[in-house]
Length: 80
Image (cartoon, rainbow, N blue to C red; front, side, top):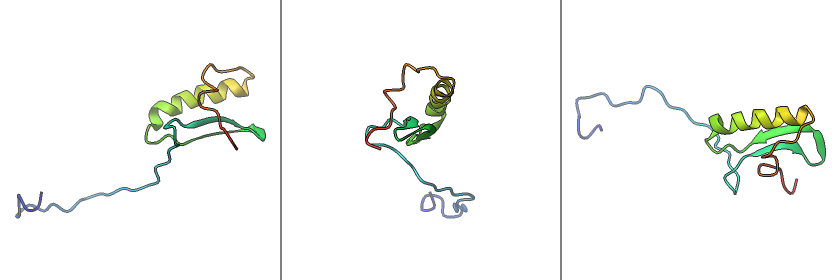
């Protein structure tokens, strides 16, 4: 933008950076850890945290309540 409008101050006022965690399948891991069934983890949203955090909250709530969630196998940890 600077070359097009040389008199305009084009310096950014704000910048942000952070880690971007994702999995090889593109789906997050949601659920209990295989060797530690009372520890629930959710990770690897890959920039889709708003959508997947809602799914994760429902899945983990169900698991803590002793219920099976229909999507639990889709997001299960593998090889841990």
